[in-house]
Amino acid sequence: MKHIGTFRINVNPKPEAIIVACGDCRFHNTFDEFRENVLQLPNGTFFPIRNAGGPTPLAHSDLMPSRCKGMLKQIMFLCANFPSIYRIILIGHLNCKYYLAAPEQCQGQGKELRDLPIAGGLVKRFLPTHKVEPYFFEPILDDDRVKVYAIDELKRHDSPIPANWTKAYQII
Ligand SMILES: [Zn+2]
Image 1 (cartoon, rainbow, N blue to C red):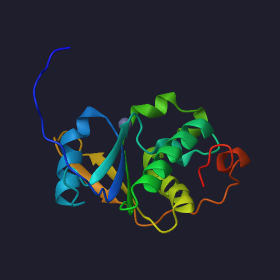
Image 2: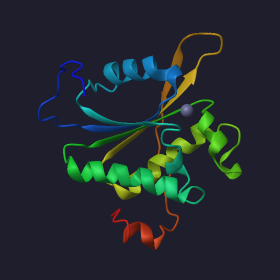
Image 3: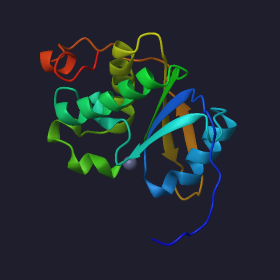
Image 4: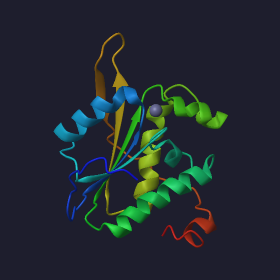
């Protein structure tokens, strides 16, 4: 192997947040500006879960159970191993292409916005003492800027949780 360079590391970080967000390249600057200026989470203070679709699976424990469980397991793992984490931030955005890979029942007008309080409600069910903060990114038509909305209320998740989620997979 070839030595490429030497880089900085954060020594003994105490992350305070997990941020689950879609990795869509259109929102990289939005994500960074919002995270630093509004969420007040500079590098080294949060654990990112950037993927395709962001928190979408968390809204569909019934229609995407394995994807939902997998994401929840990551969140639970991080919270168990980093007790300093007290905020779970979920970021969705308009016209998320991930829904092309979602079951038909997950589709519909306003799906991304509709799903955020549901996703937040599921996380709150498993982590009742954590602060769950969903946000929505909405690009302004014919503009290079994005409106960001805070979702005020979570939708209570009271569907049955499959038994194997809590036992074999040690989610709780
Ligand atoms: Zn997306």
